[in-house]
Image (cartoon, rainbow, N blue to C red):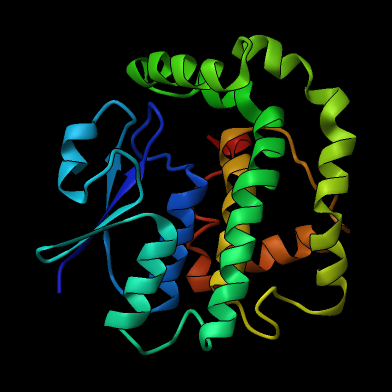
Length: 231
């Protein structure tokens, strides 16, 4: 078995920050699978061309390429059934909802808080790519989008409230043990932790306590990636 994962890197290739790649990395760790993570940047589309698309994470298992964190999770459960990421089809359906909600609601709200710092630590070529693609999406400059961060912070806190309430009554979104549902949500908080010096969570927040549990899981895999203040 020779697993490789193309993983989005900052200007420093050792710094990996993509929320989607962290979903895949934690899914692989959950399975107990060894993987070589390969630094990749936005402008290196040709390196992952066999995956059929231009985004990471992209997993290579022998001659098989799998792209997209959710599809990677499905592939891992089908190919390596031990230590399932989903306890049955209902759990997969619930995790799919969380994936979509996080990508459509939570990630955009987090991005507004961190985009300036995120842009600053990208490789020069990726900065050009990021500016062009994100400013088209925002309909304004990165700087103008970032200026609205403080005013948008209460909306982010309100967005996170369903997560907070859920974690007041159970330790993980998967219940008593973490599952892919947790990794789908955690990726956004790891993104903010690695890319930004802001801490979006107070220490007593149930989300912060849950985040710490995931940071420490799998021998501290996620925590081993330094926070922005430590880089």
